[in-house]
Length: 284
Ligand code: NAP
Image (cartoon, rainbow, N blue to C red; front, side):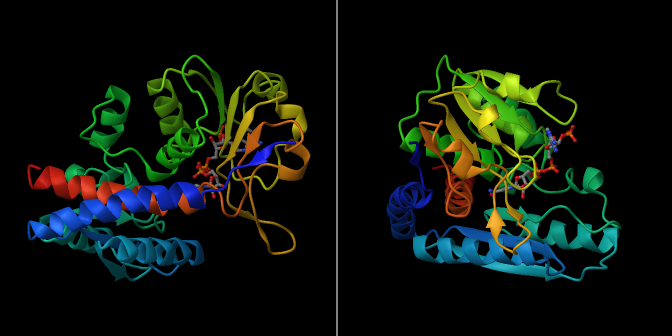
């Protein structure tokens, strides 16, 4: 039977370290500050936002929300984002995506200040992930996966890692972060042929596809570590992952649950990024 590896102990351990770091900054008269920029009031954005605000407040980070109307025009949005960029009291900015149709992500990603970009929206941070440049900010979700693997002492070096999904926010940066840990990495996507066979070579299988419970035991090698990044709503209205946990658990050595898995660590990584940005901006 596989061990169910929850996110909370990981999030708590990160938060404990961060709380001490914020205390040290406050002694120097510095309080890290995050601004969340949200367009409209999408349910999953609001859920993420509540978690992020709670986590920041627990750690001692100031956090505020800039809520913008769903139908905001592109030039107005850019104007608002530039104001947050230029606000010297703000260290980190988290912008919810995807945007409504009238906003062009491919334009806006060049507007956010890279040094304040907490979730790897700016191409500068994407490049820094590729270059393993520690002054950049990798996206929070794949970073949370790495923290979970570290916390539960899962060896990454030399291991075969397979990632299902190739989005810019999950799959591609996940591949790069695992490569940076010296794993041998394969990425699967919707055009991959014979995905169960490819996946069943994985010592570490990371799934981020957005398909409720699609991945079952035929994708899992005996003893593999399975990380489920998916967040979906099943036909009974319950939150579930991309992995059929009950079916995979007997074969896996460790497996993350959904909910209470990767998602619970993401807000701690966001807080970690705000503190890192604050220190870099204050030359500390
Ligand atoms: P996305 O942009 O829709 O990308 C999905 C990826 O999965 C694409 O690369 C797609 O392949 C691939 N895919 C879809 N169906 C597939 C199939 N049947 N077989 C193989 N590959 C398939 O989604 P995302 O933003 O990366 O999110 C993925 C999941 O993670 C979602 O459930 C989302 O809710 C969740 N998520 C969780 C967190 C968290 O904090 N836990 C954060 C972000 C996202 P193609 O490229 O070929 O189309």
